[in-house]
Length: 364
Figure 1 (cartoon, rainbow, N blue to C red):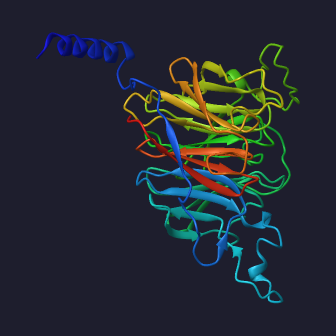
Figure 2 (figure 1 turned 45 degrees about the horizontal axis):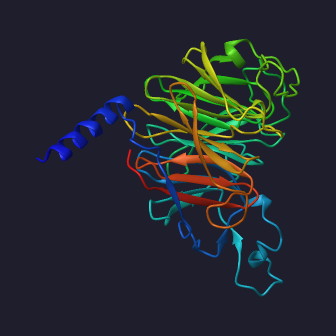
């Protein structure tokens, strides 16, 4: 080849080697898909969006809050009204990649206590669906089959007790299941200050921990960005995810940080995220980039109305996406993120009562 092309090829190879395995030459970029998932069928409308997750089939699962719809939003269910729209959609909704609804289910049923305010959702390696809630009376997580048949309840409804009670939860925000051990890890939560782990088949208690792997307390934490990082989780302990190499990432939302642990609760490190932000809430949820090395973390930030791209190894901030607003690609009350195998992002907003898809424009 001409010598200029040969030199250019060598320079390009050198850049890739320097970037490291699995790291794209440039950070990923995203573009909103304004028509994904709309309009909903069956005259349905959404309430606030609690939890969102993408399963192994790249289907998107939403746990939304029908009870938060206003009378105007659900006036199609009023027999005295003569309007076409709308009625409340069921709490749990499964979408395919194109945004079509595959199925929907959830709500009160025989043998379990449905949450009063729907929150996290997770689909495990055995296709069981786990849901949680953050109402003051929500002290339980529920396990269902993929088509909505009840399997198991861990904990029980009622007022929060304390962060060392192993019989009930404290407004659990999120959960994951480790396929290697079949243990369910719960970010617990809006009432408690801990991570707690159970056997995912039997519901038997295994272990729990607070910030830095210490025994949790229920001390009230007031975040001060100028002070040392608090020694306990605040409220809420809002998200939990696990990497392929067995690290557990926990969102301490009110303290603007992600803490990283081994599976046994041993503390590894922490990543402050825009730590000077007040009101604090820069770490609402975290997802891992779907390349082999899981090179990046993406973190939702409600007060700044953005999601941030971080380097997973050291938590270094790279860039941000989004803007405050109600239009396509903007955020009002950005709550939770999910990611599919192609690097597309799904963002759930509480106040806007919607899900937006952001297409990955640049490889893995």
